[in-house]
Amino acid sequence: MPTLTVRTRSRTEFVDITADVRQAVRASGVRSGLCVVYCPHTTAAVTIQENADPDVVRDMLLWLNQHIPKDVPGFRHAEGNSDAHIKASLVGPSVTIPVEDGDLTFGTWQGVYLCEFDGARNRTVRVKVWGESSGSVG
Ligand code: ZN
Image 1: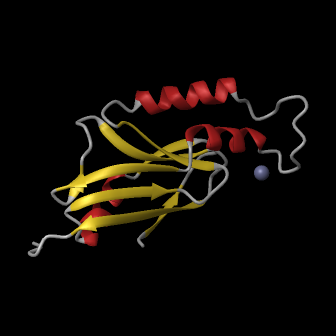
Image 2 (image 1 turned 45 degrees about the vertical axis):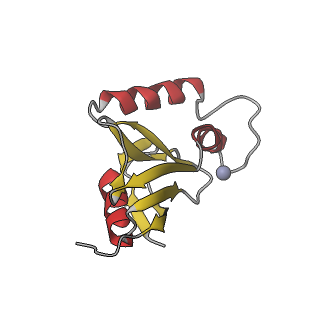
């Protein structure tokens, strides 16, 4: 199963990983099936969102940080990153994308993002693709 390593550069950040996921789908040889993008972390997540206007994910991050601030009276988790755990659970650890003709069936404005909530650090994303391969590839 392909594993992507994503270097994040801020405490909270959305990183567009669409090109890497597409590459993993192509490398799998699967023509028709499913692609699961899975983030094995408790303070990061993955989502599908618009990748045409970068202000969309910027505004999402602004809203999440405003509504789930780092320091909330009563938080007890000793690492001090309870906000990151909450954000990761709300956004979710995985997305599933149908694959047809050997490619993601994304809409025109869709991309897949790693959502960093406690960076900066190196993150792992697993890409599992399965389904039917055609007889001739490439
Ligand atoms: Zn923690």
